[in-house]
Image 1 (cartoon, helix red, strand yellow):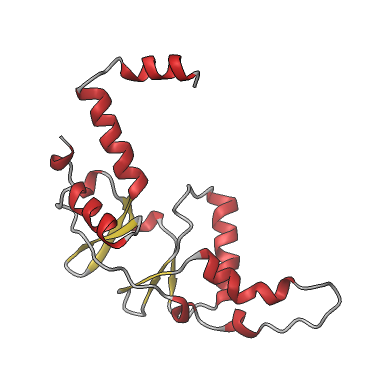
Image 2: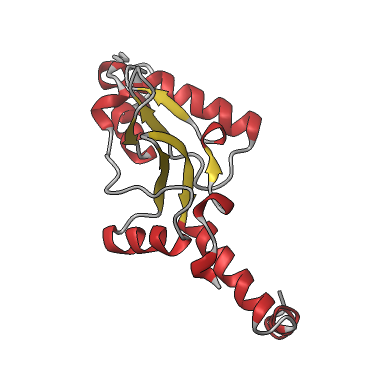
Length: 166
């Protein structure tokens, strides 16, 4: 049953998630994310970076759209003067705090409740005030879907694939 699956079995470890110090500039954050995306082929959702303070405490996340808004002026016509402006500001100015967290031992349904209550798709997994990892809505969905296929209709997957031509 989904209620018995702990967050620790589904979460993505903190070392597998992009993180920035609060003082990192927007420009540097974009460069780092590009390198990570190209070199490590980050999966969907992993490109939402986390922001940590100097003591490695989680401050929140930054949306890619907010990073791009900060450098949008750089995408103007060629030959015009290029001022870094907002691209030089620290990512701490773009941080969106998380509304709630879960612990590794919590059920994935607790994480799902937080996501639904707050309209988010990511929840930090914390233990003793320290970041352990992240849990994504898509991972909860995949876990619940796998449980449904495995427990109720093991043959359901092949039937759906055949009838929907997947």
